[in-house]
Image 1 (cartoon, each protein chain N blue to C red):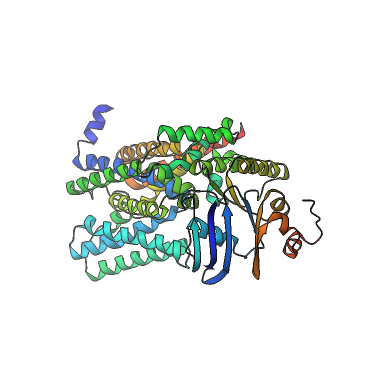
Image 2: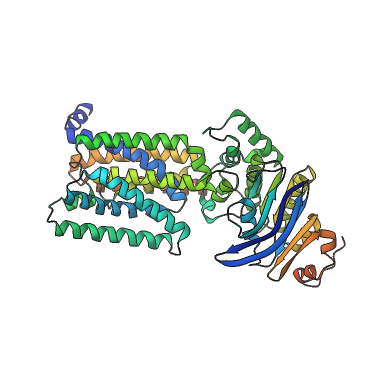
Length: 272
Length: 236
């Protein structure tokens, strides 16, 4: 078994996918619990479509994709937050408009510039897409996200649980909402090419929702989602290699299976 | 000593004037009840006092209490109904405003949370999940959290809405007890009878003017009779 694993991860594309994937899953799970509890589940989905548009433009213009996409998606995250808070439009409509327009712009740019990129890979993820350079960027981004999350953990909890109380007692809730959005944007862009624009948001939402079925405290939800996320990613990556299925899809289906098991456990516990 | 003094205060809600020229003051030890029909600007006033919303004219002055030293008990949000957090986590989060930049909880924070939990008699719920508690227990948890943030002034936004009569009167006893021990209380409520029973001062807001004064005087006014439905004789 160990021998076989060392053979698999002996391929450099597999070890790259493992490093980036584990880090991204960890960050996504941490942020996911706040997003789910603040009813922002769809933000990840919206931002990943913006990421697709940004990657398309970067490909057409020949710019380094990550450096181009990260700022664009951060701006989009700000925009979503601002519209949801201040605007007359509901958050869900804002996300729907933003995500479909960026997808459309991305498609047009690609067709006008005659760029041949692997659309399937962008949509559903590809473990072959990662280069050594991407691994370095991903590691740096993930370490920053984790560090920020740990430092501001208690404040993020307070703002997630009760924004008006936090603001009234002097915590600047606005800043933490921005922090969560910016970190989410970074994780989405970094994880997008591995998981695909359509599947990356599942990495944020599934672990949190799964853990909430059985965990009682915010801390246990956070720890449990981190574990669920990393385990599902690693297992999904290995399984998809063996039975030759798309990696992103394999991981999502595994996440779904774990969710169903946890939901069942939660139900049984409630009955008792 | 005056804790908060509002002078000629005007506030807007979505561009429309919610109330104007409101003048009242809260002294240390007061139990002020803010009553009034829906849309009279009660919630807007609360947001103004808490600094969550700008006022358009007039002034709010604080004496003896900092604007961020108000223990706030908000109305429950939908998100809190399935929020996985233990009572301990919720109460402790009230201490965050005490450690300005330090990101974690100190030993004093934890002692304080324990103290407030004991005061609210919820020691046996500490490790329970907030979402599994009854309405009355949840309010006690939020009160303990508010007390962690301040010992001077509590602002309670409809603390008994949705509670059954027994739990409601328990809740009033708890609040009254706090007030007798020196905590100044501002309470927004629709429960006019208990407002005049427990409150020492009343602020009655309505779309055509307001009343501010002692609860004992308030019960003699037409404003009170209108709020109470005209068929209530108060024995205070």
